[in-house]
Image (cartoon, rainbow, N blue to C red; front, side, top):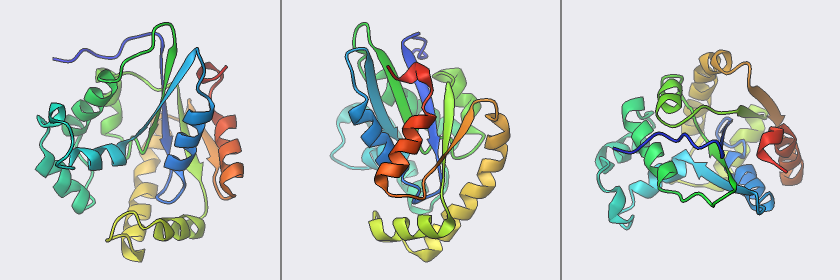
Length: 207
């Protein structure tokens, strides 16, 4: 059984936003430019990691997960329940080596997508110090979502379904994390969005 993540040198930050808000882009860019000898940044895109697990070329160490179930949920755009998702994220985090003497800052994008998974994550892995939500207009989000063409099934109907689900699911999440939640505008270009995101990061996560 894997142990919980209890290292005082770990900092967890959840990054949320509607589809097309640019979560992955700002997290990946920020993780790259903020690396230092005392801060090790890890960007974990939950959606990308789940898709990676479904790849038949994924190393055998992750084969104990029910890939067919993950694949079916992704295909049907159904959220994985906490008892399935939490062990997956725990495995990913615990299998990442910590650099001695350095603080590991986890930028976890796309989590939680439902309130059910938040307490389970906190119990098994750790609590976030900050929850950053990226906000942009529906029009901007739709344009980005459709232009990136990540999956063949990405169309107006899929965007609307995911966007409306995000808005509805965020209501209890907003309430649950209201004391540590901060908003970063994501309507502008990449530089503007990155600046807003960096400003929203808590001081504990950067030099």
